[in-house]
Structure formats: structure tokens, C-alpha cells
Length: 142
Ligand SMILES: [Cu+2]
Picture 1 (tube, protein in one colour):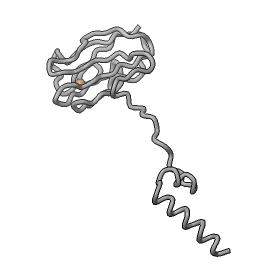
Picture 2 (tube, protein in one colour; picture 1 turned 180 degrees about the vertical axis):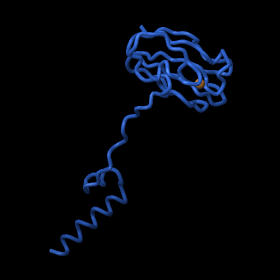
Picture 3 (cartoon, protein in one colour; picture 1 turned 90 degrees about the vertical axis):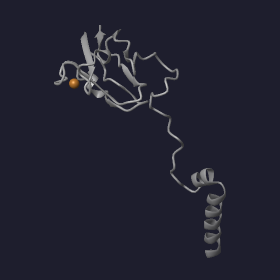
Picture 4 (tube, helix red, strand yellow; picture 1 turned 60 degrees about the vertical axis):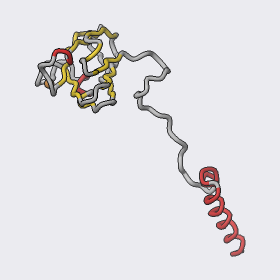
């Protein structure tokens, strides 16, 4: 009886040492498999193409775009320095708060606006360089 229990335990821990993932599951381990990535960073396919504004050393591009109601716009920082993308007007950022969700972007980083659910034209700017027109633009929602 005790021998039986000991054997079961031994098999389990031995298995865990040999083939971690599969035996762990068999022994009741609750390690979940890798969860699918939900970070949209590497623009692979899958669904509608999201409108994207890319920032480089020469500024934001495109500087103006039109998107449909409910869209989210992705800001990509391909520059070698940080940028802070916010809604106009500077410094209140009150016009289109959905854009303020982008905020601070490190080099190589990207982030989406919130859902643009109101038909209007939203200006944006780099809060760190509010007078640099190359980092300003408009998103028209309709
Ligand atoms: Cu600002």
C-alpha cells in the first residue's frame, strides 16, 4: 500500500524531470500552453488592415488620413528617439482623447488609439516638440 503510493509519486516526479511539459500536465500541473500573442506590433495579416501613421526622423507620415467611424489608428515610432503623440490642442489634449492613449512611444514601439467613434477631424502633435509641424497631422473620422 505504501509501496504503491511511493511508486506513483516516483513515476510522476521522474516523468516531470524527463519530459517536463507533457508529464506535468499528466500529473495535474496547470501550466497553460503559450497564449496566442495579442500584441499587434509586427503587422502580420489577419483581419482588416489597420490605418497606420509611421514616425521617422523626417516626421509623421501620412500627415493626414481619413478613417471610418470606429477605427483605431496605429502610431509606429520608427525613429531613433522617443515621441509623445497626443490630441490637439497642446497642452490640453482635450479634442480627441482617444489619441491620448498613444502617448509615449519608445523607438520601435507602436500603439493604437482608442476607437474613433465620433465623426470629426482630430489634430495630433508630439507633446515633446509641440512646435515641430512635421510631427503634426490630422485624422478625419467619418
Ligand atoms: Cu501637447
